[in-house]
Image (tube, rainbow over all chains, first blue to last red):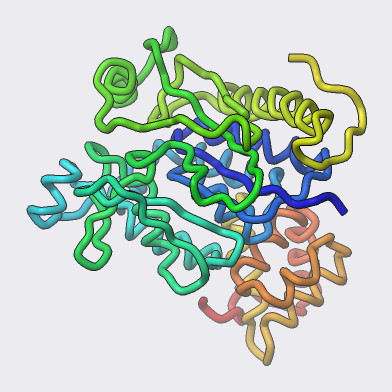
Length: 280
Length: 83
């Protein structure tokens, strides 16, 4: 049996399809995964994965959810009247807590010893780590994805928690061993594809005026870093076609497999090098 | 049928009238259809998650199986308990 590595799945909204493609490559190469650290969309995928779903299952659920993402009823369930302190941090009327509470209950998801979810204290910008089994999973998932300007923060004792990416987009600091880090890049230009006004606004914000600074530096010496590039897709572009979503999945698989095969050849991680590296 | 709708139908089947242990029903369903779901998931996961895995792995096969049970009168929609 190959020696397990850890996995860090970074923030990046709809670009999480890259993570799922990388998971497919990890499965094919027989790489054993221990603890999984996730932020924002990475936390969602980490939760599914550590609960026992494989990449095919996660992809199917994501695609089905994507088909429904234009449903205004989904947005309606997130609308809430915030307290003043939360509103000043989040500048929004949308909370992820109720939708995630319903989803976690319906899917029967549970916290587990392999899962780490990273959120961020809104005041100090220090990380808040959810690990073990004694916490509310829906609260952790809500906090980890609560990007200010889009979603309200989550109350956690005296703290208000926001998207873990405000601390670090790909936090490797919690890893005990070598990790595979799946890093989702930022949009750096506007899309040439037609967009609805809300998606266009979020794309413009990500390119020209990001709401929060999101550090990305990771330890390249210690870890295997898989950087996924999609410079015309912003994390909140939820109106993307299924074809583009599948394109991200396939790119995550191909590029991920190349990087992993190289890391196995270098002896940085253990896996089964069957077949050759896929074409880029 | 969408996965979450099928999951709901599977749970409804497992909780139908006369079933003492709904989770055992899910295990029987997995064995009957030969679905490759790891034993540790069957024993340690929540019934909702097991049903979700059955829906994801089995898909149309599960759907057809439940249809056949309904036609055979083994289960009827009106006898299934609400979740």
